[in-house]
Length: 240
Image (cartoon, rainbow, N blue to C red; front, top):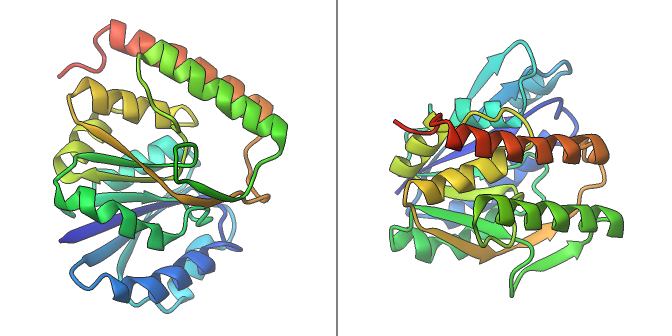
């Protein structure tokens, strides 16, 4: 199997080495998988690109860069539309979900499941370091509202560890429009809209206190994105 890993990066000069080291360490255990990694540089203003280029990498990789920060949704769209693997993995640079959790996804990949998403909230998940209680409550509220507005039943929209079969990846991300924080709900909504089955897999997850999310501002934006998402659907912007 050919696997493409898409890692969006924005000012990750201090964290990206951990991700590269983890891939170097764990990729050899996936003996039947050929991997290409796409780093999507979302307008970083630090030394992220130079750091990536300086690191020893035991895997094929490329960097896609553009000058102005556009948002993680835009970065993922850019990377996924360039991905050529049989399956494409969305993985965060902070490695909150360790790369080796991919092992849990392999049975579903072998079963040709089109969309497989990591969950921190379903039975069997292991959260090693929790968010602060108020952050958890806001996240739970976002999940509830996403399910209500989008008529879904998903335990965790925002875990940054998701795998897509190539045909599903192309159709979903070609259609995806939300550039920033609401993209998680949008891509899962589109997967369901286009008839791709979705499987949730419990994963190990550790909260990274260095997150740049401005919770109150970005949660509000995410809620607004849900409204925009429904508007897009009702006005036919996801057809085609």
